[in-house]
Image (cartoon, rainbow, N blue to C red; front, side):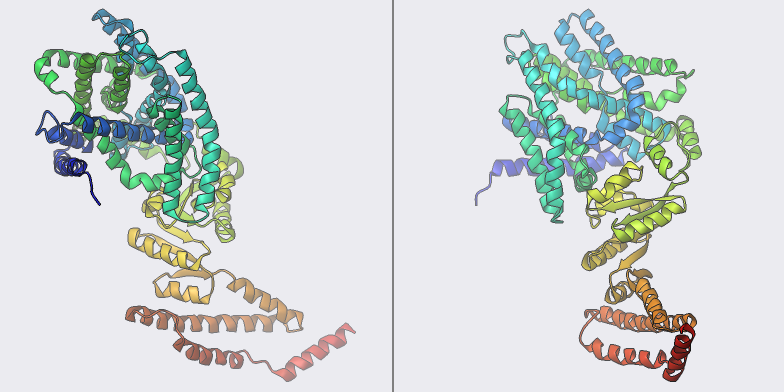
Length: 634
């Protein structure tokens, strides 16, 4: 088998550069994105020139851009949009519109044509969604007032990217060098968008349900790739943009009931995929323009940052804030451009709405502004006491049963369970046992987090406001996404014996601090769990069977006190039997043998033989009691 040596060498060089640059950038406090940018610059045409073939650069850039747009679309889950819609409409959208208008006027004043000025303005007005989301997560600002504000702003920009993908090619209309794009192309894009959004949800729902029934994780990922590639081929077949298809494919998967499963699958790869985009960006930047026109590049950078800072502060004043200081963190994160600006500019260049030299210079401006993001992080750490005071006040005053602003999920839950609040407990398996445990918790005013592989089981409780995750509980990424790392207890209520033991082993390995309460299917399963160190394990049918035995004894005439004595004696005997088997099981595990083998049968028979002696009845007394009861009935 012959491999393309050139391709392998290119991949090796890129990975080596990333492995060297990213850790160094993190040690300097500059962040992973700057590290990937530096790695791309290091091996690119303006560095060591180890990767400089135009075809190699083009393929890497196109693939990285497609992956980026899929990930951006995947972040736009309906629950997030619903939660942030007010800030998105009142802050995010006005911020982009006003910035675009100002940049357009600056461009027209500088001598640009109207189409070129509008294209540049729309690109520079966007803020980085990926970098801001990473910053918020790294600084534990998720759920805080300022963190939600900045996230809503950048999410609005990510959502605005859909119409930009459709409309930007029109700005090159009339340019003889541009590809012919007209209103019919826009109509095709709109029709395909509606078709994918409307039909994609139905197709993904049924296809993924069929695949997940097999409980084969590799087939789930294969099915997702099948759907994504199908969307891309559909757009390419009709002459539309593959980038638009990648973005919409991400949006469709974000709205899927299997989003959590896919998120847990992508979680280890997401950072690398985003890093690949920034690496390709570092490869393609023409830093020669910075050397030839340093004053112009810096002037454009200062104008861009100044406009966006002033617009953000003005919106803050209009919303009722009387000082700019509370907006220091927000403004610092929103002012730089980012990956959305780069992609929008690349589309404008491809359709000749912006000439290549101007576009290359603006890409340098975008990259320089992105490098400012880690500087913001460094300043944030040094001035934490002053810059984050409002954030700490919000976080300290926000308790699980106190919500700042409207929350439709909690309102829906409160309508059914008025006193319920989320507790640090996860229930894996929402069948008959898991549902009963959940109902008991809710009756005490507590809402556990639920995980199950069957979306139909979770559909109703999800609408009630419970936090649910559909997917394979054996995937540690899914449990991490569900928040098990910050919880104190987990109920394992899945029915399958083998998968239950695998889940116990996995949780013990990845979440050793979590206390386990496990459902056992029979005595053998219970002994195996206890031998593995699980203290709270409960046989699902044991207690009901003992109570049925009590009723059966009463039904044939045994006094209820005697029936209770027998059942209690049986429970004591069963407990001693279990303890004996557990000890034997532990010895077997330590020796590497299976917990159960034929040699246990003889010992079990001898112990069980004691039961008849322990529970023997006085037959004469029983017959006298039965005769007395019969005479009384007569």
